[in-house]
Length: 189
Length: 189
DNA sequence: CCAGCATGAGACATTCTTGTCTCATGTGGA
DNA sequence: TCCACATGAGACAAGAATGTCTCATGCTGG
Image (cartoon, rainbow over all chains, first blue to last red; front, side):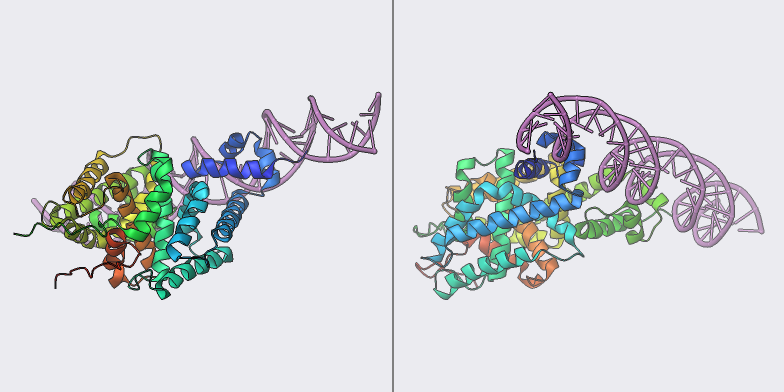
């Protein structure tokens, strides 16, 4: 009977998100299998991380697909995208920090595809006049990833309630901390 | 002649920011000293990271002090704070990702002090009506760290120009991506 | 000038992780 | 029932990083 590869990947993601230096043995135990079996499935730690990366890319692309980024107001599309990514945010947070280790090596082209589509969404919002143009699409894309990772970590820490995840990320990303349309209450002397 | 401890720390910070898994030998070479001397200064890798953490805390507190967070509009104080932290953002980014390794262990209380002061700044902005109140101070604080780390990484990658660092972080954090389509907001010259 | 001291270089043991192998087991399908 | 195959358990060696030690060297202050 073949090992449930998907279950192994998700266990590994959950563990590595909490402890990025976990041993292959710890990963195996977390998945409820032996180190030997884990090694039969994934040739090594590197292969495991690559598989997790592929999983993260697939989930991001699925969320991107489901969010219909070309449809309706860009702001609404961003909200749909964040809401769709939310369940996978912990894995994304792990991959985001792990990305720094890919310094010299080639970056998986899947990320480039995702980057391009997300940046295109922000660019569309700028073209339609919905988003400001002094923040570059590349930066908005990067900031989205950073906020997703921060929020995932904050939820894991308990400083943000899980149900507030999407609201916190979307509202900060789109609206910012400054109070919007209310009358300016400046108390100038 | 005693080794320039500050120089060693800064070299280590620069290297570890790029390659967080760098060996003690690599750290020593980057600082231009031998592994033996490095080990005489810092009892081990752990001690080195702790020293870097202390350095980051000191720099954050200095920036916090210089930003005068109790003075003037909260938005301006946030801008001063980000501008002051900018030079240390790479080190902060490294410590931010390294923080995840402190899972079980006690967290340096310096971070708590900084968190409290930053959160107090956001809370002050909320109390004065300058900031919206549906985003909690804890989340705004966390998001600030995340954006600083993202921006530092984006600058290192080359996708954001160094001179845009403060503007990108502050404008996204305070104003968000959405275009302020209401009244034209006043900007002091 | 000379003694002391910090440094650089390197050897060494230890520990940890990994990759590989073997073997017993037990379970499902022919 | 019986066989094939996947699994679990564990042994084993290789490699890497670390911590510790020794020794020679070169500089500096007395």
